[in-house]
Length: 382
Image (cartoon, rainbow, N blue to C red; front, side, top):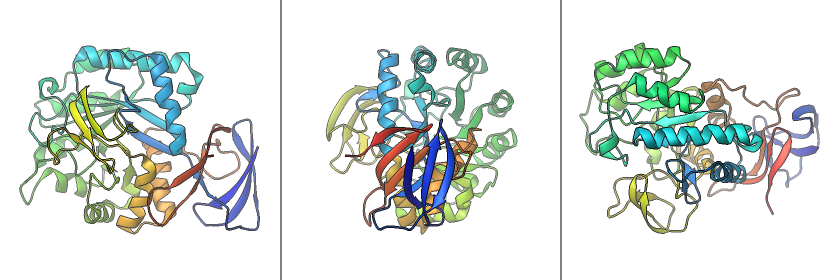
């Protein structure tokens, strides 16, 4: 198979030859105005579901996991972490068990899913930091419980988001990191000492920094400044235009540096559904607004996850923070892959052919033309 496009990193047009899942040749060609951009496929570390299907669902099946996984192709996502959010042990263990079964039974799921992300349940009970996570299921870290969840997942939990505000958090973090799990700080009301202790223990990421926070916080110090300032933490950012204002995105990217930022979508189960109110989701009643924003039903302040794919984040981080295309792409592909110890795709001979070809309009998200996963075209736009 051969595809041609403009390299995302230097703008030169190339003809890429793919054989047996890898890039086998890359030849410079004369550029044409119709050439799409070509880049490594996106790696989304936080996807809670899609198209009306949540992963937190007692009715989840391996077939439903497959449908969500295939839906990622249209947005240029070649790898993603199915994400379970704060709930009962019974719900979380069911989700882990079904996700693991899907990876074992389906090669299509397995090549798209390198692991799982568990966001909670060890998060703050306080309004604001808790976000839309159900209060009755927020609880302190429990190592025995987490080991049982990891067992149900077949060892596939790659990221655990927690708040280090509870007694014993640092010890829990050290154990989890030693077991190979990336610990992310999120949904937290932790103070400066607790944040520092968490990072000293091995926490290395901030989950959607700037979101899941109090409406008003102390000027300084506070848990946003503490995480922003610590160079040992990589910040994931939801740059959909709803979760963070442009000035905040610009400040975070400049403060952290692009090398310490990754883009995530935080898609929820109702993402991709028409505007309107939806009841009985795992986080309660929600509403999808006409612009794609998803909120807790009955108000407009508290978000309930995201409804727009990572293609919006790529375009928006360029507009909001002044990033160039290469920087934006690598925040959505190479850097998140490296975080979960996945070999990142490179536009180079010998690299695995996980690629996305796309257009970048002046307004709106990146428009995916073609997605190639392990050398196979899995999405081709009409």
